[in-house]
Amino acid sequence: MDKDIININTEIGRLKLQKTEGLQNKIYNLKMKIDRLRLEESTIECIRFIQNPEVSIKPVKPKKTLLIVLAGAGSFLALIFLAFFLEYIQKAKRDNVIK
Image (cartoon, rainbow, N blue to C red; front, side, top):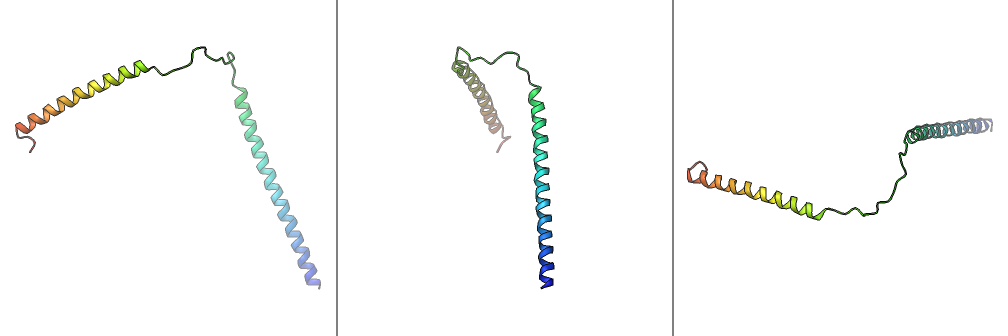
């Protein structure tokens, strides 16, 4: 009976210690979160607005004509390169460089 009482008292002490350690871990984690939030707050406080944001009157649209012209010019250059490359291959076959 005395051994059971001693075992129960040690178990109670162990559980109290675990509870204390768990609470200390939670406190430590909360302190770390607070420190991180303070750091973020200081970063946000450094931002200044020069003027308030405004909505543009004209909506922003893609420049279709510019995109089409650039695509056409790029395609034209690629075709010229391809034509020179094919001519090089034909000459090389004719001169027996490529077999």
